[in-house]
Length: 330
Length: 309
Image (cartoon, rainbow over all chains, first blue to last red; front, side, top):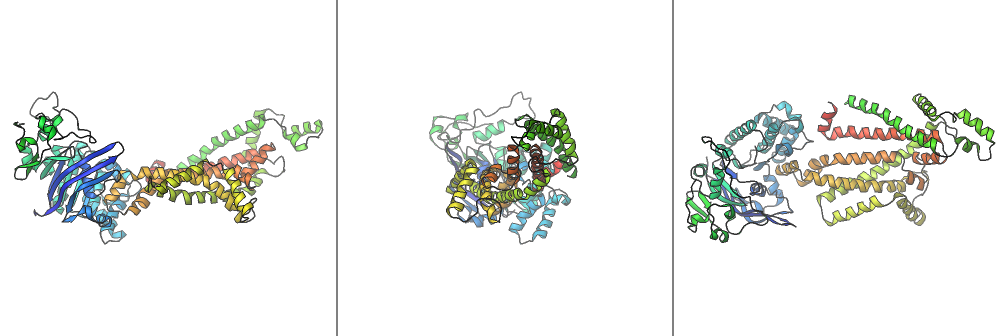
């Protein structure tokens, strides 16, 4: 695997400015991703995962969404400072995205073939017939018979629709694939199939991937690196091994703690107490402190910095700045 | 698909029976004696009595209705009480005028409504959106006889550019068609806008953008075809309604169409003409609706697959 840097996000902040208040969806996150690597972006609903992904694609609905600050560097180019036309040529070509809900992600009045061929026609120098032929190949690649190229989305099941979406996103061999909860809407057997498929294709084309999910099981199967998001911040970032063997942020521990253990008799799940904070009115200091079992007065006042506790393992918690005296244990 | 069309045509039978029954009832129970009207105020009572018997007007109501249905099935709708001509030949003589007026009116409405609706939706809350929405509100709320009169006042009486009555040349269509088209254009604009606004927020539009499709193509190719489905319904309804004769507009412009024929027939208690006109209108309206439903199938493959079931 080449260690060339593909994507570098620095201090990215994205707000949704509405009449009812400003939703601070993403607050100064940093992400680094090398070619061929897979990053798992994990967090609860509303943590800002999808907003981050749409930010990279520059598809934040504006208004009300706005990228307030930060830099998104892709192949050395700052995506936030290139003209829309240039960005359009990157979308679907070098960076493509799989959306959460396959049931609504495909245009109901166009055949799946047309929808796959469209992205090929835009980005590759092929005519209609050639693009259609390539679309058939893509369908076969994701395990759908090419004969169904002229069928409409309503003639497919949910899992097959997601395969079509994957075929669209991979049609131009992207450098970076952003998959936003690609398996959430699917049942468990289909989930496994789709994950296998994505894994295989990723290896075949050496595509880097950002996998957005709230399922740590999926992360452990697919990812090389993991970033845990909470209230628009990355609270812990580490390699897969580091994170699963040595999780350090109280929130990450809470996530692991909430997964029932197969070896024990469990009567009740152990959730993280409290709820996600209101994104229009985030807590001061550490955003997790109201729910944190180790929280002290200082947590409400001082915002933690990202501390590298071992090579490539960063945690955003005052414990590791030496300001809170606590032993974090599973 | 053929089965579906056949079923829809069969459904026309109960519709027509219902419509004629209601109209027949209303005509029978409104005051006024057709025989008296035909013979004039000063006719001797014996002559009126004799004519009533000849026309079968003394039979019980239900017998009269069944006789009408029986003749209608044979294609005989009778003769007009006033002109003595076959009612259907009278309707057919006037129908082309109504058809052409309705077609031009709807064409104007579509040509204005759909583009303005799209522009409004893609620039929601902009100045151009506000202006077109105010325009649409005016268009919907303006009574069309008033608009017709104002148009006559300005373009015929004032400027003398266009004729104000009858149907002599192609120029005669302009004012009545604008009068009819304005209301329809306003409705179509509003429908297109709201439908477009809904579609543009759908996930598949985001998918299209994520593929790198240009904004223009996103709107005109991906969004429009989906957004048009409810718009087609509205256009169809408007067209069907105008085909039934836009009574007020035809009256204001003395347009020789079916709508005015019906109004005159009602005034003269010319039951055969009224009934035949109503049957004719109900049939055309149903046909236009059927046409719209068939058109759906071509726009939306999901509906097509439902029809073939």
